[in-house]
Image 1 (tube, helix red, strand yellow):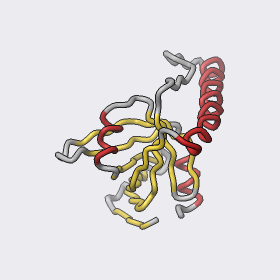
Image 2: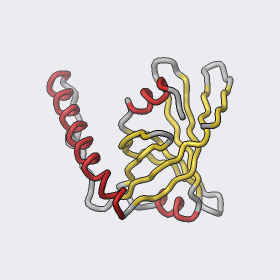
Image 3: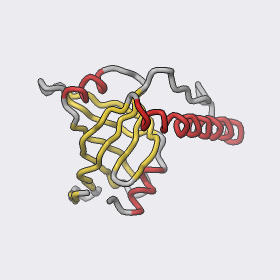
Image 4: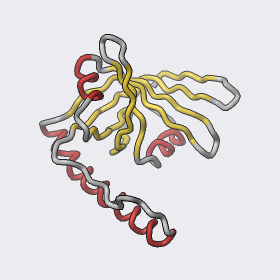
Length: 154
């Protein structure tokens, strides 16, 4: 299980970068909408059914990355991805996705009005066709500004 500080850092994000690779070694990295963290799993929304989706169908290993801009510590989370596109678990997260979509849209609108931020699009739209990427966190790598790495199995 990941520690509380890392969990809070992940949960403060709206998007996280996911890197995948096909069987010939061709890499792909793309931002994904972070839905939730539950135990050792991250739930991401893949709403552009493209290269990430096809890569994960043949090679379910992925690496996620982000940086804590306050400490400049980078994080990499490696694990196995399950594509959830039907069934009870999929139907269960639809409500959570709709709620998060509304919350994020409201936040962006309020921020735009109160801080004068000019977002090109205030509302977050999730298309009708999407899949949930359920990432089983297996390893967390912490990359410090000094160049030191700390690897930890989850």
